[in-house]
Length: 84
Image (cartoon, rainbow, N blue to C red; front, side, top):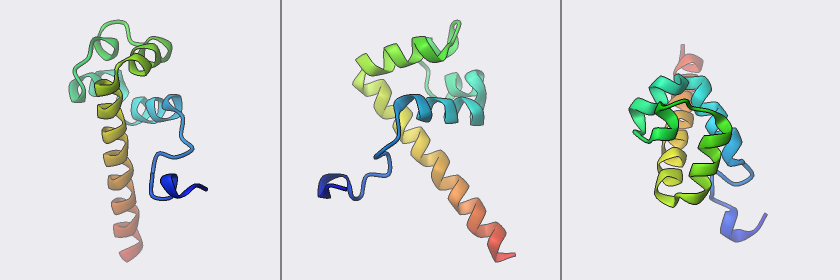
């Protein structure tokens, strides 16, 4: 692993993997409420969303940030369950 990627939590994840995890967690409606972009609201699909996100850096950044927040919540929930 290169030093530039050593601390990157998204290293090795494809945009498709990230998007599928978010759709699984929130559904298209929930994703559209959290990130208000048309590809999540009007006739959403993985293919159309990937096409848009690959061309739109600000939208991709929002998706990646939401994914990291989701993973952090899951980690915190796992740790809380282990403390019981």
